Amino acid sequence: MNSDNFRMPARRLAAVATAAALTAAPLFLSARPAHATGGHGHASAAVLRAGLDVSLLHRTADVPLTLSLDEVQAPGDADRTALSARLDGVDQGRPFSVLRADVASARATATDERAEGSVRLANARLHVPGLPLLSLVEVGTVTARATCAAGREPEAEANVLGAVTVLGKRTTLTAGGPTEVRVPGVGEVRLGLAEHRTTSGTAAATALRLKVSVNPLRLNVAEVTGTVTLAEASCETPVGEEETTPSEAPASSEPAAPESAAPAPEKSTEAPASRAEPQGTRSNLAETGGSSATPYIAGGALALLLLGGGAVTVARRRRG
Image 1: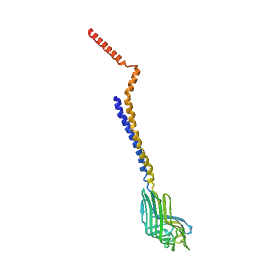
Image 2: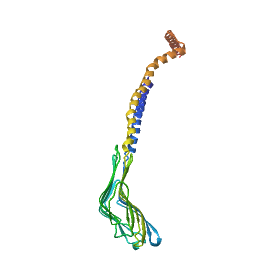
Image 3: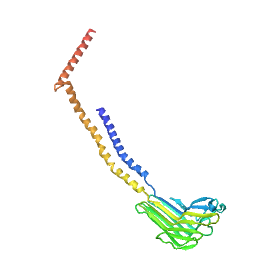
Image 4: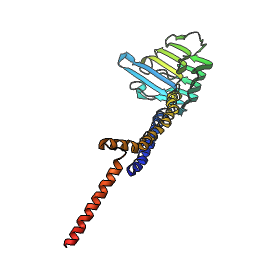
């Protein structure tokens, strides 16, 4: 009985520990994805990107010109209004102006609910090597915006407002397709207006894209070719909410199982303890072959043993 009394608390403690472990396990498993989620969206913006090849006179060299102005990744913003560059072999290595504007700003933000890139450019003048006095393009107001919000379709928009002048010529841009401007003795520029595209999770917008091919024949520059983009923005939709949804289901369904399983160990330990004594009595009777007269026989044998022991003791005392 003593051993049973000590076993039962131990068994109950083991059952409680098991139930606690089963209850804690799903809570831990459901908590892990919460740390892995919370993925922010992505956004970027740039006032200008240029990739040009500059050929020097007499084809002595081809010099690449790759640069950007106010290029930012979320989170970030920039508002530089001027950009200059320097190329070996062009105007004896002196710096030349690439872009000047009254307003030039780029901003990119991203959270777990929304990502957005935006650009604004006002009264801007763009130059290429070899044409220091003649602007490649002049624009009034240029904007681009890309917005990606969780649970919504991505949006993109770009606008070119006001007059546009290309190589000194006032130009009317159309949304139906690219516009080509040719200036004899200088070159040609092909302009793409307000390009934007969206997918299920991304958006991008470019206000103005220029394909350039000019022949300055000045300042040791024979030809300039390549592309220039003004006001470019892009974004990617945040995915944090989609990742957290599957992890919440196991957390709500798992704890119910340990509660129903916890009482089971107590029933299995207490029930055998109450039946232990009768089963032991029956097994002992079977082993000794006893019956209902067994107690009387055992009592008589004990009495004879005591009488015999007493007689021996009396005899020894008499001898002594």
